[in-house]
Length: 611
Image (cartoon, rainbow, N blue to C red; front, side, top):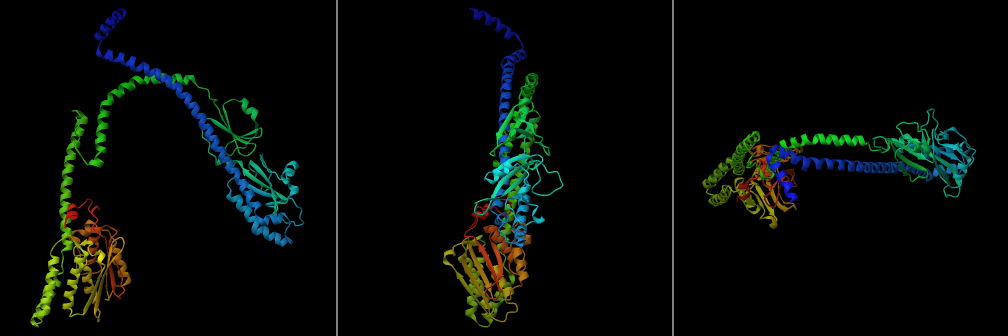
């Protein structure tokens, strides 16, 4: 009963308020307050996660930097391994040479270049030197650059005794004692690496190797992330601040701890060395910044929501429209059919639909015109027959009749009728068997006309005789044999046509024993034949009787038809033939490339489906 008493006044108050008040109250209770509570909780969680993420990044960065630091120190180990295996150096340190001349020659040829190369090729190595343990009567200044007497060893005798007994040593020298090379410059801070060098059979120590690793070079190659952090190199109980070109002034680690802040450490694999990172701010969370962030979020939440509500309607329309436009890449231009209203966006969509209809109509018109143009061009290329050939053949038949050579005239008419029947069939495709039969008729007509001063031989592999090929593709090439091969030829013209399977297609080699061409002319012709078939090459206006080998339909024309029929990797090539004249190689595919895109930018469906 108490619930009903409370509900009735609340319902009456709700029904008596305006819609805007209802929406505001609903927004405050259901959106604003929960959002503010969530923002407060989320901000605190985010700060904690950022703290953890930053700690992880510091540790990861420090771990990677320590690995790089170790890699740079390994350059010193590499120098030691190289010099320990240098026989000439070991012989010098062991006093194995009998004369100063031999020792000097070995030093200059096999030792000094190795030292210089190690210093120049290892980026952090600033100096290399050897302290000679065994006394020698040989003394000359040429060796002082890299080899010195053990009496000049600048470090503690305890270190030297430990080294000569088989140990190694590393320590920081700021600035180092210059022992590897003479220089007037102030040496940079470095890590001194000391190694024991043994003789060839490792039976005794013969010297101490000193390798200086420049700290500036080491830390210039290690990239530290910025953002309020200090970095230190710890060696023993001393810490050296890492700065570009810094002096590396040591300080006690206890002093660093007293200054406070979060300190992260990563131990090097080399004993005694560690890399440290310290946050200057010490990781304290600034609650004022948190409060300001929450306050700013609350103040911006209301206008941001109203702005979002205002633009949401238009943004949703734009999103749907953009998705429709992206689909045009796959489906082509289509009309946008969704209801967009009568506002400015509706006007844009209306104009887009009108433009789409116009573009689609223009595309259909252009494709139809291009298709008709392609058909006309292809038929023009394949149907040209030299009219002089017809006139001369008919005149030759007439002369045989006047000379009462009726049998020859009858045979010529029979062959000519077969030739013309095939030539005027106006098909797009044929087979190699039919093409070679057509060529046989053509050559037979020329035999009669030239009174058998022409001989020919046609050799074909039976496995490829049914391969598809363009119509009348070989006749122009054979015609050129007559037009140019018989020039300045007193002997009988011999023509050979060979067909073979080339693995990736069929090759037809047409050779003669004619006059041939110069090397330069052959090169020019092959350069023209390598040009891709283009709409300009295939157009009616550019069907040429020239192109290096004039006459007939033209070699360039035939080459363009082959590329159009099979693809760009096929076509003609010209070489010197085995019979002394020229050899024209026709490279054709096994069948028409029916999935290829035509050179006009689309697929010629009529060309694909015609027979």
